[in-house]
Amino acid sequence: MTSATTPDTDTGSPVAGRRVVVSAREVAREAGVSTATVSYVFNARGGVSQATRDHVRAVAERLGYDRPVPARERRSLDVLGLALSNVANPFYPELSVAFCAAAARRGFGVFLAHTGDDDDSASRTIRSMIERGVDGIAIAVARSDSAKAVRDMRRARLPFVQISRAYTGISSDFVGIDDLAAARQIAAHALGHRRGPIATVVGPHTSSASADRESGFVAEARAAGTDLPAEYRVSVPLTLEGGRAAAAHLLALPVPPKFVLCGSDVLALGVMTHAQSRGLDVPRDIAVTGFDGIEVCATEMIRLTGVVQPHVDMARSAVDLLIDRISGRRSALSCVRIPHALSIGRTCGCPREEREH
Image (cartoon, rainbow, N blue to C red; front, top):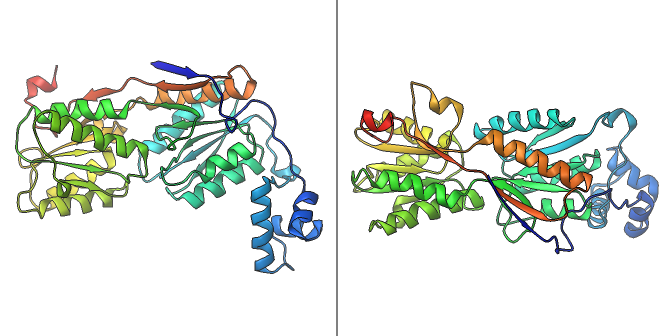
């Protein structure tokens, strides 16, 4: 595990300590309404028009207002927030289990939320966590096209750490593998087979992890003298159906690929499912690699070749970074790169003796 630290000179960066509190009275004054109206809006009571509700919420968001949480809703122990992108991708549930275990060992509970890889949902989730008084947030929902959630956390002066994905241009604690290097390594393994045309299937480019993995695949292919035309590079949602759709596109090409490098295991499963529905054998007719190392892909039935992300180590490091930031023991930003591994299974078409060494 490697950790790089940098001085925390960004005035918008997370800091230790409690948040600056904005009162309902300040929101009411700024919005030109009564404090009772603000209370009605944030407690979902009637008697307020939708236009007024929208106006009050917009003002509250701009000021960084946190709704006071009734005593019955308040936590009774220290709590970390964990915002996940898409639990349809098994990597995230596995990461969440490891995160909850690591937090429990440090005496913290976890407020767990799923955003569906939607930026508005992520922002609402973060605001809800802030309102309920979490001590810090770990986010695995970063998108390169928006950073609304980060603005919410910084306005609330709430410590946070990014896991696996990173917001473009945002200085913060980060934990993850070196996606570019890992992608190049698995691509080099695939290119060593020299089977024929190669294709890539990754998640949305708004995910820094997906973008870096595709870049690594392409860079290694070019270094080996193999071009990857645009039609052989596919970006789809990180779901089984996304993998199936990608395979349908690739297998319809005049010269279909013989090897598909996938940016996640769930995409690899989708690609293999569609290929097999077409009567193709994996790996004889088409070879496939994945990325993540989810538990099901290591089973004897699948034995997917791919990059393994050490999700337990990632979760533990994220929890430790976050708690150190909350307690004030850490002032410098940290980028922790956890070493990845390759798992050589049967889907790449390796000879048995190579798989066993």
